[in-house]
Image (cartoon, rainbow, N blue to C red; front, side, top):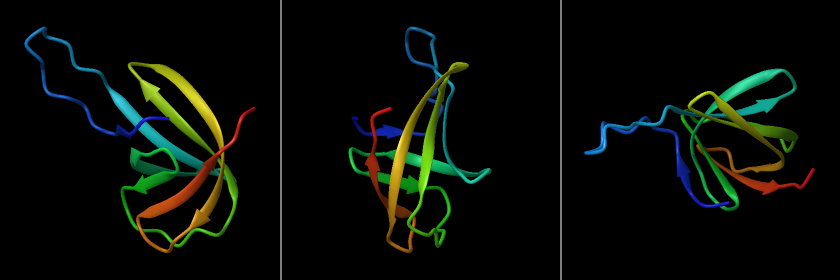
Length: 86
C-alpha cells in the first residue's frame, strides 16, 4: 500500500478535488487517521491503543475500501500496522 494522506486537495487546474477520509475501526470505536504508510498508520491525535486487530476504512468520493489490520502500538500518533489479506 502506498502512502496516502487524509486530505481534501484544493482545486487542481482541471477542477477536480477528491474527498478523502481514513478511519481505524477497533471494537466499535472509530479513530481518525491522517496518513497511511506501507506498515504504519499516522493518527490525527495521539492515542494509547493496545495491540489489537481492527480495520482501516478508506473513503474516496463516497467509495469505500477496507483492510483488516493487526496493530503494534508505539504509544504515539504513529502505529505500526500489519495489513492482512481477507
